[in-house]
Image (tube, rainbow, N blue to C red; front, side, top):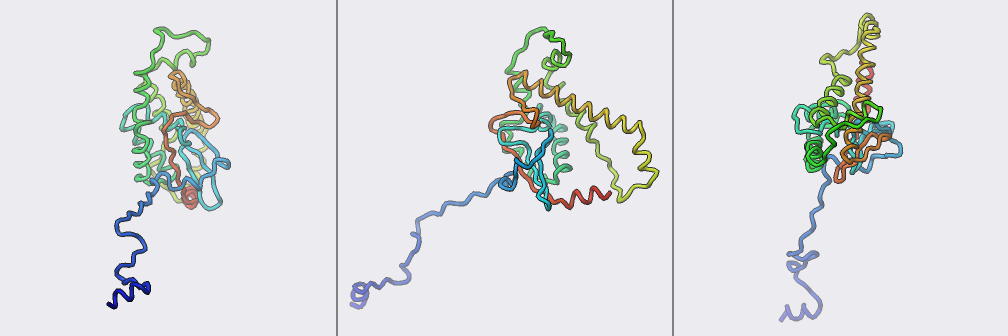
Length: 247
């Protein structure tokens, strides 16, 4: 009797109140992948670029992007031509040293881009056929580079990159005056200049090699178009570079 009376008055037992029906499922909010967490913080309009990445500073932190979506940095393209584990290890090392990015972020980025990047150069060589004889354009590089094998292009690039980015196993808080003086010796300067120039030419050869196989290269931004590629975005502390500069 009382229940009927309370029902007429609009009373509903507390146990039956539900803001959301029990069987309603809340859609899970998917967290962005680690290599995409800093995408909104990157400003291409302010960024500089080289063969490895785009970067800019906001005064407190450095922001990095490995190319753009659908556009791969030439250095990444060079290291991923084949399935060489050593080349991939050198790629990872170069990214950690340059940006301070952790290996788990690199691993996630690599997994996301596996269909696009894994040994893509070998797949290109299987798809593209070339004339049996080289053309004579009068430009030695143009006449030669498209005809080298993918493993040869991969080796030329990887060795040129490593020579130009050789990292010392020693860390000094400060260098002695005699050491600094020797560092400026003309022989050592010549070696550094030669390695940098060799890498510059090898990157041009890589661009020629890729273009000969139908890919589009943007030399101004140092990237090659590969649809489906996901760029890696990362924010690193400027303190890391302050420590390096103080050595």
